[in-house]
Amino acid sequence: MTPEDAVLAACDAVLADGDIVTDTDILPTYSQDRSMGSAVGTPFAAVFPRTTDQVSAIMRAAHAHRVPVVPRGAGSGLTGGSNAVDGSLIVCVERMRRVLAVDVSNGYVETEPGIYNTELREHVAGYGLWYAPDPASKDFCSIGGNVNTNAGGLCCVKYGVTRDAVLGLEVVLADGRVGRFGRRTIKGVAGYDLAGLMVGSEGTLGIVTMARLRLRPLPPTPTTAVAVFANVVAAGAAVEQVMAQLTPSMLELMDRTTLTAVEAWRPMGLDTTAEALLIAQVDTPGTAGAAEADRLLAICEQAGAVEAYRSEDPEQAEMLLGARRMAIPALEAMGDWLLDDIAVPRTQLAQAVGMIEETAARHEVIIGTFGHAGDGNLHPTIVVPRGDQAAMQRAMAAFDEILDIALSLGGTVTGEHGVGTLKAAHLAKELDEVAIDWHGRIKQALDPLGILNPGKSLPRW
Image: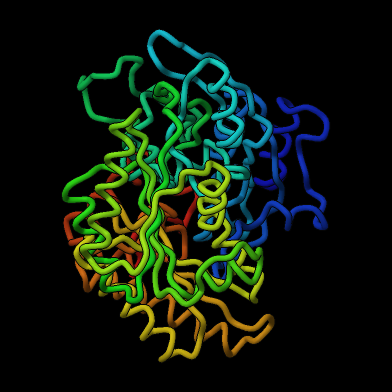
């Protein structure tokens, strides 16, 4: 019996009918995420556990037979983090979708990893509570994937990223043992932060089967402010000044290329002559919120905004926020696309956008830049004609150059999408020798056989 057959026999012993897929026509559906340009291998099977005990049994078998395992959630990643490797077993947790508990008094929810972000948010809203992290893909990304990549979102400028919401995790380790890390209390510093270590590890250290997530009271209806700029430098200056004086719940940037793409895809009267648009929200309640929004607009005007206004109409506010959320699908509609994800110090925001524009011209590609301006997180999205392989090669070169730009400005190669396979080489550029050594030692300690998501997330020269 081959190692693969032995693992499948172990899976068959614990899984229900239909929870094991070996059909070569179906497996490609579960073999890669949404990224372009990332390597994709051929798995021998995909399994769909429904309980922690089942995940544990699968991992015990994989460990015993040294079979590589690729954990997978909704497959919405953008760096190849859940792409199959040759000869691997895909362990997909999409059928683990239960909300296990909502503790209103202590402000947390316990949930399985397969539930979508939006579904969880809607569930806890029924208790008058709010889960803050809100990736742009919130309607189709899973909580397990959010934990694995330490996902952010539009509200993270004020409320933090996924790690800031994680109180505890249940994790199946490489050898099948089940670890329960973290706490139920808001504060707690006992021992190493093992839950924090798991967040953002991209399935290379364990498979998350339960997340205990911090909840907040439902925020009041926010006040939306918009500022239009004739140049990106002025927009960057406005961001710097806003964040030095205020704490908006959202501060988003869209460049002219992105505005034009959104307007062409879903016409809504956006000003496509503007070089940059800032969309901000303030969720301070009552008149204080309106005053804070007015102060934000005054800062933008002093920085050189050609137009700045507060949206009094909830429908208009939702339309503007919708325009920002439409950035990715609008750019996708233009051709083959490659979405980058960098973060730079806010003082370098305008310079980063300018250097990205130069990169687009040099490589003869379209790049629409948008992102979370309040924390310096940009998503330059490269677009080329569909099926044009020469253009895609130029796009890949531009992608790598954008990562170099981030590092040259004191930034990071990923703000929230993770490393996967696309950014492993650039992660090695970002980390120093000691940090690279620690990454290897931690991986070796928790997964000595190297079977969990091999080739992902770790620095590679």
